[in-house]
Length: 118
Image 1 (tube, rainbow, N blue to C red):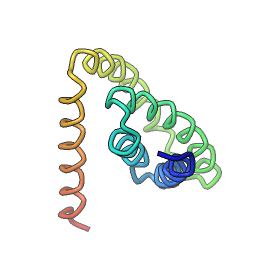
Image 2: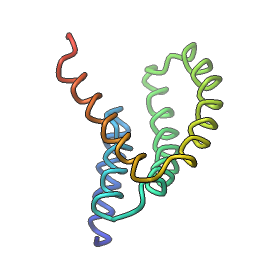
Image 3: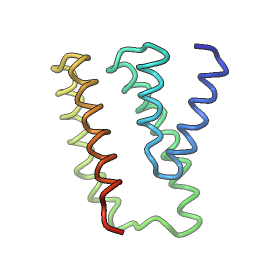
């Protein structure tokens, strides 16, 4: 893949991530399918990407008073052990199976989005 394709994938993943629309999913799909990066490595790249995008998004959303602080701390409190457990679990699962789990997860989220009540 060309540098321009990578830049465009990063731009659109960042834009979708800032909008809360799953830019990380787009980035992982790009990295695994088009850049041919192993699933576990793509997820690692995505996490580095996500941290930087999330930081900028939280700052910008805070200025618009769209961040509810009472939900952040419990999420962080449980998110840290969850991420440690997820890291451990991902090191025990074959990369191919991890990719299949990711695909099924995206499919289920997509189906939910289509049929959710407005």
